[in-house]
Image (cartoon, rainbow over all chains, first blue to last red; front, side, top):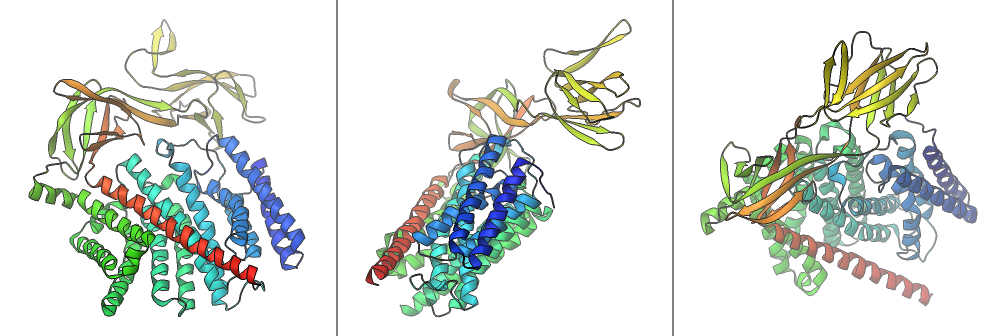
Length: 264
Length: 344
């Protein structure tokens, strides 16, 4: 546990507080106040990200602190995109997701600025990490929808929105291309930096696993359609579980040390 | 036919599930063992079966041909698998046996500054093979970040401070401890003795001994001088109160290369991490170097066989996935929802 008594830390804590307040207030059915607090949390997270960028003088996506900070920022626009364009609910849960992803940045990972090592000085660095960040948020939303499906309830009473099984599918449809792009960019970058598109590094193998789980989900859903909605949801939840392992365990554990160790 | 399709779908699903577990297993055994595991004979059979299932799927499911995005996705996967197999060590052996293409799959080159070299030390052996052209290393250099070269200071009581290297700027270590000022930075620290005095100086010419001269003002007003060496970390004399560590942060490794063929320079490139040289069917990567003195560079040499096929696969897969899921699936569902709302 690392409490940050810095401007950076304060901005993160303010964003967490705003997201949590938005969640609680929305649960208490004060939707408008919840929306204002949610927006406030987003603006604060943007400031925190911008401040970090200014401080380290490169796109702040180098380590887990910066990745979680970025996730905390993109939750709000993705939440809007999913609600307005994809017509998938779960806005209240998004507020909680925002707070959850900012928590490790605020309390777990060190904010010590570091120079980019030579391997990270590539044009692929920012898009590779950014598309993963976006896809992880989509997949987190898919997991929430899948959880609702397993709990056999919709997350809201809006009849215009699809059910959680369809919601899960749409979220995975939105996130999977980004996950694929992240994997391909990583592979291309591996070729540029280390000479191999695929080095069989533990992090690479862990990042292949969730991609394969979602490939399995699509094939299973194609084979059986909505006949086994619970199994469809289990695939989605399994995908997220492997993503969490890829993001945290594979990065932090010495068991999986390899070429990607600088992500810590 | 339906039975065949069902069998292919199940085969595909089982292959995917198997690969999920194999990937997780591979992550636990480490990169080296995972590489040999995934290149072993049983796994080669697996890759072959997976490719056949994919090709069979494209042939058996008319939908995969009718829907271009789905076709691109599956063709992309096939190309990635075929390109990777073609570029693998076994692929190179087959190319040599059946088509007489004699290429080095992967190896290393050690080149001294100013020297010419065409021998490649093969991976996993001490054998060497020659390239049909020669490389000359004009210069190898390491670049460092200008600021934030950290000097780590530790008192004998265990207190630690990190001080940025800014010449002639005084840093307080806190009340009752004193201040430090870095007065000089050396690239190649040497000592000479003039009379009874020891004089530190930066020696010109070859040599590598980066160091800092640090002035420490103690709370009682006394001033002492200490040296912090990058190559001799934690160097301390008995009478000194602080352990100093000097560590610069590397920003880049650069090998200036020339490619020589028939006594003519046919290509030039300063290779860095992320900026390899591509020539004659090989990629040359900055891999390692002579750590203490920087007299030579170590390049990794990798054959480019199959790479364009893999890249074509990446492109098709990417286009196919975005087309199918974003343009077809999500835009279709969006349109349906809009229709429903309008209907209501």
